Amino acid sequence: MASIPVETVIDTAKKVLYTGHIGDGKIFVYRVDNVVKVRTGEEGVAALQDVE
Image (cartoon, rainbow, N blue to C red):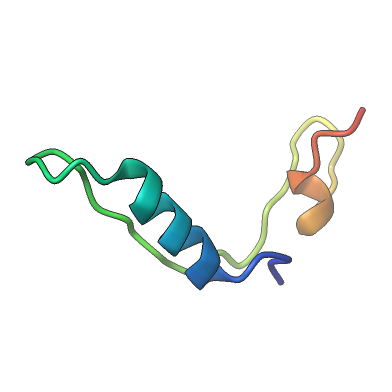
């Protein structure tokens, strides 16, 4: 489960990335079942942390 709501991330990205010109891009939103950090074997939210 994400600690930051998806809508907050999308709204922020739209504000930061918007130029009004062709090429602003698209945001794809989809569910991720799991994340695994290969180096440590950590999974889930712990795998997304960059703390050494």
